[in-house]
Image (tube, rainbow, N blue to C red):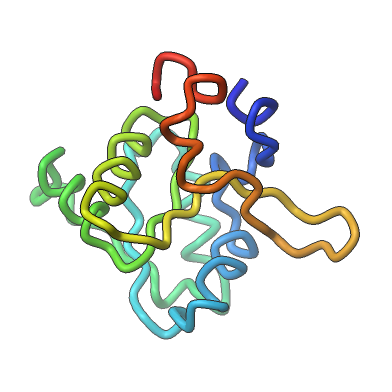
Length: 139
């Protein structure tokens, strides 16, 4: 699996829990700005959890269903100030590769909690999205 090969947490990027999101955005000074969630609605509990969080719930935004389309979602994600995605998703892979091609940083895909400090950290850098030994056919 991608998690085993990269060393990232196998569930964190899928569950997108508020503490995970805050651990990424806080050091960037981005917890006072809107957080746009792009979703396929397969994991409605993720959005509900984020909206219910007392720290970031008021910052959560979604694209209205009538305005939602793949091109718009891709553009929004590619042009964002920071991108947090699930490395096992082909959609995330395309977005991350596009952002890197445009010279954008702040892609957060391969993260794990440090066993000693408990802090979230990047365990595999941006190059991992292109690494066949990690991503297999999705690289």
